[in-house]
Length: 82
Length: 246
Image (cartoon, rainbow over all chains, first blue to last red; front, top):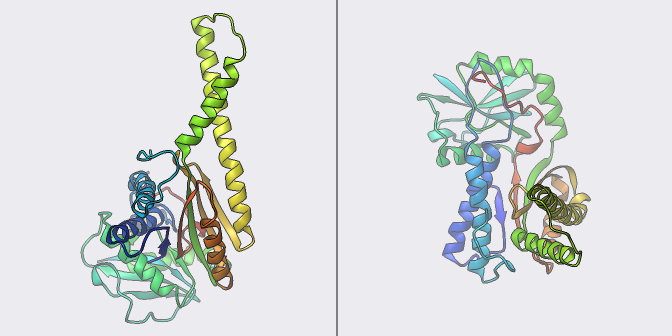
């Protein structure tokens, strides 16, 4: 899977899980909303894109959570992102 | 039986048996002239967007991109028969060929930058309020107050966006020397300052990664997410969103 690099401690199992989650969200961000789209009756289905907005919020949240796990919180704002 | 298509490649050769697709299905190449479509036969219809299948789709593309140039299809692109796939290859051959040549030996990287948006907005609001407090103002009518408030909000938003643009310009200029093409999205959410996709030549990927490490460790209030190499999802040109149901 396309490697995801943030600033987390790789020895932490919690951070590892978060990294996997972020990787998944990065994949979803691309595979569900980007790539070649063929239109016309010969195509039976193309992925629905509704998930992306949920995914984007989770992604921001996951990255900030990794920062907190690492003990280097973002300066100032400690609330969950919108 | 339906045919699932993962992407288009710059080869009409057979694909190695080690590549497995959705639900463990075999992946094969449907050739047309000097290109081909990566495909699997589907015994049962796939209509749900589930995480496992999305990862299987991505895994096929990432395995194949080690040997070929790949144009990724959007997840869940399914055709009713092989002839339909060949028909698409025929109809869009020149577009696919052009993209395959342009994207040869290149990969996509993602950089997301998170900033403390709420803190920055609050700083702007405070500075604006302070400046306004020093200006004496007569009693306003409700209508005038409303307009004034709207104008204040507009100015604060504008300043917030200008601050975002300034920071994005610094980041983007830093990476520009390594990239062939780019797609930048500003403020997808209040805290996501930048979501960037960069197309990087294989020869420059190590330098690009080192540059990112340098940027990431610089002392500032930004947090970074780097990902890649990806198939060039953001750089294929045939991405019309309309389909038969619309």
